[in-house]
Amino acid sequence: MPGCFLLTLKVVKFERFAATTHDLNFAEFVLKNAMVLEKITFSCSPPKKLGQKKWKKVRDNILSYTR
Image (cartoon, rainbow, N blue to C red; front, side, top):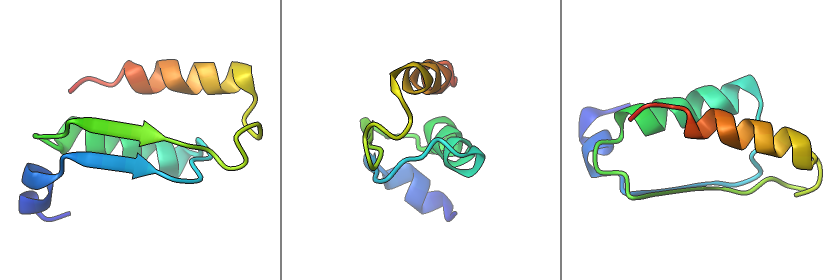
């Protein structure tokens, strides 16, 4: 990803987030490298596919990423 992109990226919205290894790795990369990121949102499709317990675990995992 070009450095200028990471220096200007302010908002990220993940659509159809399935919490796959690829999804989580990319989310971690964005959180660690997007220097001016102000907001990141996740929506899974269908929303109930992950289940409430798994989504909580995924959310806690994402929140543990350092910036």
